Image (tube, rainbow over all chains, first blue to last red):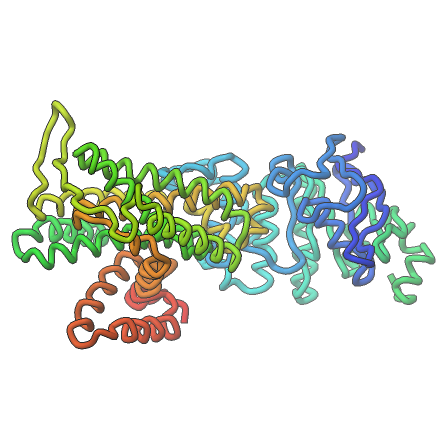
Length: 250
Length: 310
């Protein structure tokens, strides 16, 4: 499989704290990857660095062999990197439909049309409707996004991330705050989308059952560094990984 | 359909106004229209983009002074107004480049500072602006396109129609703008700039566009003032003048298209009524705004549309 993103000696430091330190890893195209680790391991910081939300203090990031270390988040989206956030990040005052339409218009470079009516962008509208169906929000399309239930807002976040038609999509705890049934449903949806679309997904997730059942590859982080990476069965039998999870069954 | 009919009725009513009312009402209506344009521009920044500017009076002042200077040299109303708008737009573009790098209170303070710098220029640059005396004797020049038409503007009724046409055009353009992909993009930035950036939107560029358009609207409102008053003085650029569109927008409704227009109307009505009883009319206005902000965050418009945020 071709590599899609690669880091070399990536580091991010907040004062004395090494949130991410000397991280060298590669994500491969079409491989469903999970990034796991205890709280404070640096998973979200790593996603923030890869998506451009944070700039690294050290190291380099390559997306399809192009150095994107200093590329702005909006430009990374144009290259094909998308993400969702650990803490809900949608457009709460816009309708569900508009939440998806906005990234669709952005991808099609149709944002700066000061006098054209939204309805006139027929292809963008059709695509938006399709994505709404994909993430099961067709019936909620006209509701303000802020009024949706937590689970539906998580689905909407997923929809927003997909609407940019990414090649690589990071989902930071896409099922946090959901009940176990919703959680399995959402993650299965993610898996389904990853097989239907030409998108490589990398998720940060705490639910080990889900992680081990869905992932093709697992990256384990601890204290800002990569502790181990490999296939689920290799990670399951790794003693160091077991130790950082305090002997929990994983 | 109902909305269209209402708008057409309102335009017809405003068009026929000079036949039914006296000069004072007409004069006040012009001021309401000017404040509406001023507040619409402000609301593009605040309600649609999420940036609270305290310096919009600066651009209003630039529009007013630029128009006045042009009219004092070339007696062409159209040139004066369009020139005023263009200069205000250019100044807002330049100051926007410096301001939009920041958000929240830092943005507000920067705009306040830039606004007061413009005020200071108006106050101190006597050779250009007339200092504290301002510019006087500004002619209400004829509206003309050489070879095509020439309309005398001596009567206030004539000038009222010029203001009305400019206002209708500007409001129509604004309506198209906020309902376009550009308007949606600005609202997205208002709701979450990080999310907007992570869907591929260059937040700074769009903020600059919003800032410049807001400056153009403030400039248009300002440019329409000197031919009415025949004078322009530094207080038009003072920060306290920037509070007028803020109050009008809060009164009418922040997140609605019509809010600033309705708010401007209410602002002048309240002012006109209360000022007859007490010189402390601003206290009464403040109380009304407080009640609205605490009880009906969506402003008066939301009370009727029942979409207000309580």
